[in-house]
Length: 245
Image 1 (tube, helix red, strand yellow):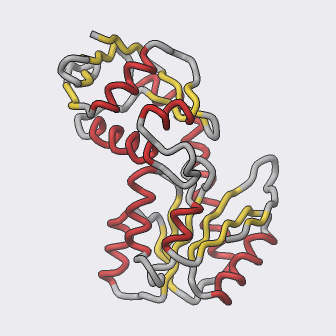
Image 2 (tube, one colour):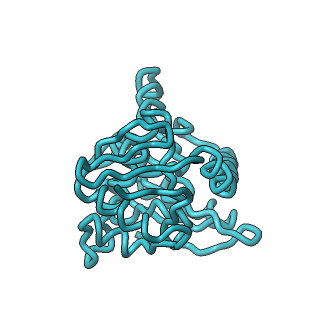
């Protein structure tokens, strides 16, 4: 696992490159580095789980055939907890593989051999799109979550402004009660991790990330958006009224 550290304008594009072919990985690493991108290399699924940081990486480039995991599985794992850009880069050309890749959450499916410039441009475009959405997130969230949310501690449920209840786990309820008393205050990632029982001594643990992603997904299924804004590399902030009953 290595990192290269470069800048594009005032910001940096962070790429997680998961590829077990040493020659190809080195080639892509060198080219993207020359394009002023930060590149983190991983040669296996195990390395991927050690490296992946949903708050730091902008795009993941993933090979499908890894020695200890399937790139499809890694794609699904990323999409479960993050909206970063995902590019599958593989020798598989069959239609069913492409469909599975997109079905697991990939944004782009590229087949080998890949043109390095095309890959770099794809990474750049995905990053611009994601950062634009992050910048717009506070406005979008405030417009979507108008009204009062209610947390019923006894029934362990969250009620949307429209009155729809969403069942919560014990830790989800504890987390929401915690942030309800701190409106418009940034809650650090360490505080969130502690509530969800994440091992603070394990730098690769992502228990809190996964838990929040699943909670967001359940709330979206009832047509609402969790009134929680992610502050990049800092933590989270409640952006609506949340009453605790």
